[in-house]
Length: 263
Image: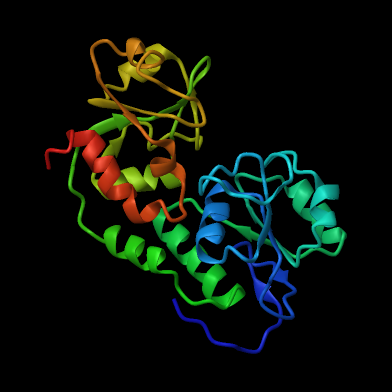
């Protein structure tokens, strides 16, 4: 990756909010697991804090600031960050507002599609961190520009059970499925993650039910038994819902899971 110095000043985040940046941030706290991984891989010397849910890369050794929905703002302030990165869906507006009121710049991302993910991360690394485009992001953009390889296959993707919740409309995971050619049977739902009964889920007639290991941890012993007459496939939640460096391998990994590696 390449970067170049430039005049700095306020930059507008994905919500259009001006974020004061007198220089490229050097001390960053991430409240988003996907972005934590992206920062740790690309600018590891700048990441000083992350949530307890930030599990990638393995062995990440930074200060922990509790969860995505209940970050420890006192701990964040103590780290003296010159930037906190957040996400509109994963983090609370209340925490963003209070961190900003404490004088901490917060960059909020909005990611509901693959294109938004690529553009948002590109802006973060190029315009905010001033390090150019990471190689993994270039690879991801090229990979996800390919034509769909599984056109027309009807799928459902539960993300929770008791109650059952599924991937619906306007979601990153839903767009990723469409990029593979898959048809989300709940893609026209009003809610982004609608609650459904098990009968409704079966009645939607998916040909395949994808069972990720997060946020609910579906396993071979917990999930497939609910769909005795429908093919189920256990997949990595990180490959399905994370939009950091995993995007560079997610397409291949998901297609291999769906086809048994026989493409």
